[in-house]
Image (cartoon, rainbow, N blue to C red; front, side, top):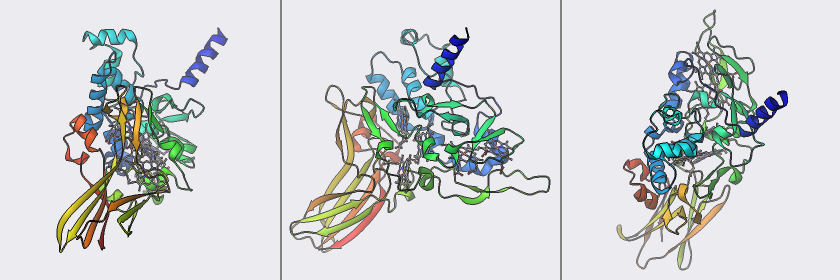
Length: 396
Ligand code: HEC
Ligand code: HEC
Ligand code: HEC
Ligand code: HEC
Ligand code: HEC
C-alpha cells in the first residue's frame, strides 16, 4: 500500500495542479485591509485585479470567440483553460468528455465545473492568495505547464513573503526566494509563454528576456523603498519599518508608462526618412500578449499645412488553420512579428514627399491592433487609444 501512496504523491508533485481550498479568512483582499490597506489599494488599481472574465472586456470577448470557433469545447471548458493563469485559485482545473456531453445539453448547472467558475474564490482574479500562497514553483515541469499547473500551494492561512522574521497575529508566514532574491521565477509562472488551441506558441516572453541585472519587479513594482509591510502597531505603538515595493504592477494599460519607453531617432537620407526605434528594455516591445501594436505616424507639412501622411504598424498577425486572419489563441501560425527585440532596434524607411518642408513624427502604442479589435468587436475606447511614446518635429 505504501508504494502506492508514494507513487500517487509523486504523480501529484509532477502534475502540480493540486487544489488547496482557501479559507474564508483569507480568500479576498478585503480580509487583508485591516493591516495591509496601502497594499490592497495599490493592487486594486492593477490589472492583476481585473483578470476575471467579468472585469476585462478583451479577455471576456476572446474567451467567447474561442469557444464559438472551437468545436467540442464548451464556453466553461475554455474558461477553465484560461483560468490556469488568469484565475489560478479555481477549484476545478480541467474538464472531461462527460462534462462536455452534459454541457452541450445545458444540463451542467450543478456540476463542480460550473460552480467553480461562479465561486467568489476567483472573482478577484490574481489576488493576494494567488502569489502569497505559493509554496513551490516546479521549474522541472515541461515549459508549457504554467500558472496553476506549475505551482503547489501552502496550507490555507500561511503567507509566503520576502521576510524571514515576519510575525502576524492573523496568519502564519514563511520566507521564499521567489518573493525576495529571485522574483522573476514568480512572474514567469504566468508571464513566460502561451499556446493557442492549435498548439501554436504565439508568445514567449521568457525566452526573449535579457535581464542585464534588472528584474521584472524593479520596473513593474518599482524599487524597494522604506515603508511598512503592515500598518499594525506593536504594544509600544510603533510600526515596523521595512523595505517594500509598490503593488501597482503598472504596465501596458498605463499611459504614463509608455512615455519614452523607446528611444526614437529620425534621419534624412537622400530619398528617404529613416526612423530608428531603440528598445532599452530587457524584453521585446510589443511583447507578452499578441495583437499589441506600436504605431509610427508621419505627417508631412508645407507652410504649416498637412499635405500627406504615412502610417506603419508594428504588430503580430496570425492565421487560423484554414489560413484566415485570426486572434492569437486560435492561431496555427504567426505570419508577421514586427516587435523590436530586447536591447535591440528597428529602422523604418519613410519616403520624402515633394514640397514638404517639415515632418511631425509620432510613435505610440495600442493595446489591440485594428484587425483583432474589429474581429472581437471591442467597445471600450481604451483598446484603441494611442499612448504616446515619443513625438518629434523635423525640418527638412
Ligand atoms: C503578482 C503577485 C503578487 C500579488 C497578486 C500580491 N503580491 Fe504581495 N508581494 C509580491 C512580491 C513579488 C513581493 C516582494 C516585494 C519585494 O521585493 O519587497 C510582495 C511583498 C508583499 C508584502 C511584504 C512587503 C513588501 O512590499 O515587500 C506584503 C505584506 C504583501 N506583499 C501583501 C500583499 C497583499 C495584501 C496582496 C493583495 C492585495 C498582495 N500582496 C498581492 C507579489 C504579489
Ligand atoms: C491583523 C493584521 C493582519 C491581517 C488582517 C493580515 N496581515 Fe499580513 N501581516 C501582518 C503583520 C503584522 C505582518 C508582519 C509585518 C512585519 O514583520 O513587518 C504581516 C506580514 C505579511 C506578509 C509578509 C510575510 C513574510 O514573511 O515576508 C504577507 C505576504 C502578508 N502579511 C499577507 C497578508 C494577506 C494576503 C492578508 C489577507 C488575506 C493578510 N496578510 C492579513 C498582519 C496582518
Ligand atoms: C498567476 C499568474 C501571474 C503571475 C504569477 C504574475 N502575473 Fe502579471 N499578469 C497575469 C495576467 C493574467 C495578466 C493580465 C491581466 C489582464 O489584463 O486582465 C497580468 C498582467 C501583468 C502586467 C500588465 C499590466 C498592464 O497594465 O498591462 C504586468 C506589468 C504584470 N502582470 C507584472 C507581473 C510581475 C512583475 C509579476 C511577478 C512579480 C507577475 N506579473 C506575476 C498573470 C500573472
Ligand atoms: C528595465 C525595466 C523593465 C524590466 C526589468 C521589465 N520590464 Fe516589462 N516593460 C517595461 C517597459 C518600460 C514597458 C513598456 C511600458 C509598459 O507597458 O509598462 C514594459 C512592458 C511590459 C509588458 C507589456 C508589453 C506589451 O508590449 O504589451 C509586460 C507584460 C511586461 N512588461 C512584463 C514584464 C515581465 C514579466 C518582466 C520580467 C520577465 C519585465 N516586464 C521586465 C520595462 C521593464
Ligand atoms: C500561460 C498563462 C496564461 C494562460 C493559460 C492564458 N493567459 Fe491570457 N495572459 C497571460 C498573461 C501573463 C497576460 C498579460 C501579458 C501581457 O499583457 O502582455 C495575459 C493577457 C491576456 C489578454 C490581454 C488582456 C488585456 O487586458 O489586455 C487576453 C485577451 C488574454 N490573456 C486572453 C486569454 C485567453 C482567452 C486564454 C485562454 C484561452 C488565456 N488568456 C490563457 C497569461 C495566460
